[in-house]
Length: 359
Image 1 (cartoon, one colour):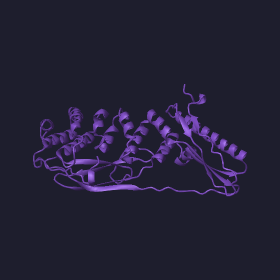
Image 2: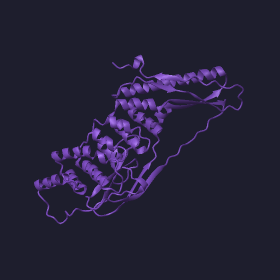
Image 3: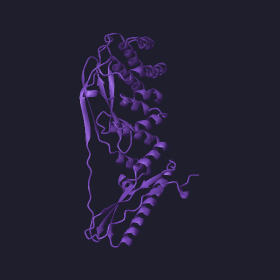
């Protein structure tokens, strides 16, 4: 969940349970039932909190149903009991280890995306929800988590989308004979946020969950990928405030797409990037030789990509019936140029060729 202004207003106080003798299992279950049926959100939250720790089939079903009725609270503002109750509900569901159907999680994706993704990871039928979340432009970590989960599941629809999005480029650097080409390097970065976590009086203790891609001590692995995604727990004790912070490195989506393909092919990222985003230096002699050289390199790249996709298909993913678009680029660095160079025509690479057709 994202909290505006960097301040989280969710807090916790005990509900007078301290000091009582530990009840037996039947008494505890009856107590949880009674609290979950209370019209008061603080009492109801205590029932949900207990239900998440009872690990009972009955209470697992009740928790799942609670998501259905709690959907009306999804747009609640911070500093309210409604938000505190939802925090307790997500905590209880994650603690209980239950699988909440994706359809019940979907209403909460805007403000509670971190715990939603943790729960969606447990539901083998959540591909549709994950596919929608991979289009999220507001947070890199959401995009990465959704794609990592679909990658781990080897989703055919996801694989087709990645191929359509990866793009194929070939940049020809044209030099005078005997000249060389330069190179460039990229840069990375990250983002952090800090605040205070607190809950209204009368609510149980709760754990808040936050996704990150720079796993630190205490982080829990959520999904592996070119960059693994973890989640961090922030425990807000009863009647106390705690520091609340999260950090994630910026995600290069283009690099991640190459990374997914590399993992599927069991290649290095460097090898895969060189295949899909090739750069070739061509020493210029004549226009005819230049055109022949460009055509030779483009055909070799096309064939290499087809062989790459065929190799992936041997590991369980079907070759999709898509065409990859290749638009060659020319970087003319000749010092003795007399005539402009022709730009090679764009071409499509059909992946599903007769030799690659599936039985």
